[in-house]
Image 1 (cartoon, rainbow, N blue to C red):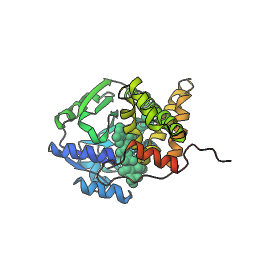
Image 2: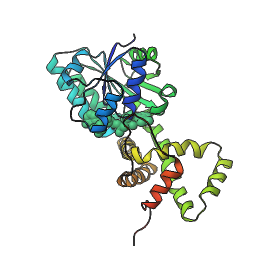
Image 3: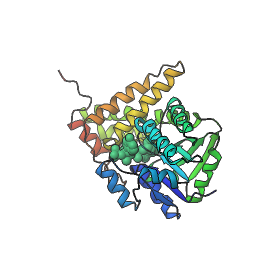
Image 4: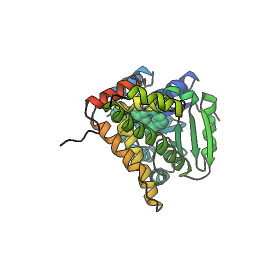
Length: 295
Ligand SMILES: NC(=O)c1ccc[n+]([C@@H]2O[C@H](COP(=O)([O-])OP(=O)(O)OC[C@H]3O[C@@H](n4cnc5c(N)ncnc54)[C@H](OP(=O)(O)O)[C@@H]3O)[C@@H](O)[C@H]2O)c1
C-alpha cells in the first residue's frame, strides 16, 4: 500500500532527501520542527515541508519516520508515544531509520507499544545525496508494509519479522564504512606529514582500485557528520558488549571521529547537500592538528 501522508522527524540531511523524493512522488510530507536548530528549520522550508505541531503530525500521518541522530532515537520515540496516547490514536506505524543498536531498537519499540503503535526497525544504507541508489532495510512484524515506499522511488528490503534485525544489520555495516574512513584518515594524515600524500594515494589506487575515492567521499563529509558517525560506533560497541563480544576497532574509530567532531570545522547545509573534497578535508584536519601529539 502506498503511503499518502508521512511525518518525518527531523529534516536533517537524510530527512531532506527523503522529503524531496516523497514529494516528487505525490506524497504529502510534514514535520514538527519546534525547538530544532535554525538550519533544520531552513532545510524544511527549502524542501517545502510544513512544520506542524507534533499532535497534528501523529494524528494525521500514515507513517512516522524517525531520521535523527542515534542518541536522539529514544527521546523522539517517547515524545511520539506520549503524543499518540494524548491523541488517542492506536494504529500508527512508526519507522526508526537510524543507525541504532538492537537494544536501542527494543527500547524504542517498547515505548511505542505502550501507545499501541507499531514499530518497524529500519536502516538506510547509501548516501542521502544519492537516495535513489540507497536501500531501506526493515524488519519487524509489520515490516512488509514498508514495501509501500517502493511506489515513491525507494528501494526497500525486508530482512525478517524480528525487531533488531535491521538495526544489527546496519550497525555491522556502519562499522565497515566508518572504520575505513577512520583508518584512511589516519594514514593519509601520516602521508601528509611526510609529504607523500599524492604518491601514496596513487599507490593505494593501484593496489585497491576505487577504494580511496569511495572512502574519500565519506571522509569529505566528516567535518559535518563525524559526531553522528561517532555515535554509531558507540552503538556498535554497546551491541557487541551486550552479546559478549569485545569490539576493538569500533572504539578506535569512535575516538578518531570524536576528535574530528571536536574540531567543529563543518557547517551543515540548508539544502541537504555536501561540499568539500577529500584533500580539502584532510588539509583542514592537518592544519587543525588532528591526531598530532601535544607535548
Ligand atoms: N546522511 C546520510 O548520508 C545518511 C546515510 C545513511 C543513514 N543515515 C542515517 O540518517 C540519520 C540522520 O542522519 P543525517 O545525516 O540526516 O543527520 P543530520 O544531518 O545531523 O540530521 C539530524 C537531524 O535530527 C535532528 N535531531 C537531533 N536531535 C533531535 C531530537 N532530539 N528530536 C528531533 N530531532 C532531532 C537534527 O536537528 P537539529 O539540527 O536541531 O540538531 C537534524 O535535523 C542517522 O541516524 C543516520 O544513521 C544518514
